[in-house]
Length: 351
Image (cartoon, rainbow, N blue to C red; front, side):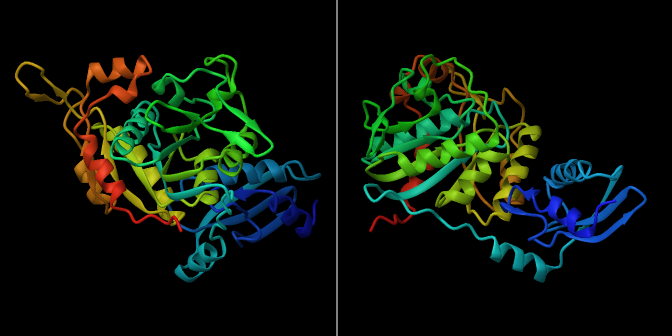
């Protein structure tokens, strides 16, 4: 049977993905018992509803079952006290990176959904366009490494990134929006990017560290669906000023958005509000609005999350066609004005 030291050493390689530290240094492993081929312990969580507790327990089991003599791993859950939780969160505060000295970025916002298929990337692109039209210098960091779609929306060809000793030059759209995406590094836009978490995290960090963004008023970060590696990398390693959550009218979408919101609260990242996409279809003849996907639940969702419903965007076939054709800069959507106004109201940090 392994010793207590060997067990704790194995568990020291298992991380809380949200906090970016191992379970041992976070003092999450308690009540450890080693007997007759069984290792049992209590995994103390910062919050009882931690969405990643099953993931951490699975990683811990796999690490311990590799030890000689371990036949079974039993994991129970406990909850930290308020004082312990505060101590852990304070000790895990993200150390924000120093920006390339050639770059001056006023504010960084991320757009996330927690769920795929809600139009998060199109919202990011249309927001960038709206800000650019208002005179802002805007960039988009496409953090959806394996499912990048931002270049397609802007009609940017694959293989469009260039660089040298000084860094990577972003692609630039006709409106002057600067864009970096994994799809701009591929020879063909439909080539698969089959990478695991560490490579994805490293590429996102490289986009921040090595890209010559220049002077930007706003950098938008388009996140992939879910609350896994890419999202956590962005939140812990980029100076995010706030997050916009994209949802759709269905309750299912709201459920997943709640998960994303809980992660943001744990990481102490401000939630600016909720954008409801595909909210209604506006009849071109009568101007009447029809709830194609049922009644909206986003107002109640915003109230439950103590934030605001920023805007409701229509389901518009014309916009979908423009985006498919790479002409997102031609989209005219009055409802985007509320979202742009919110961003413009946030004080910039450019020295």
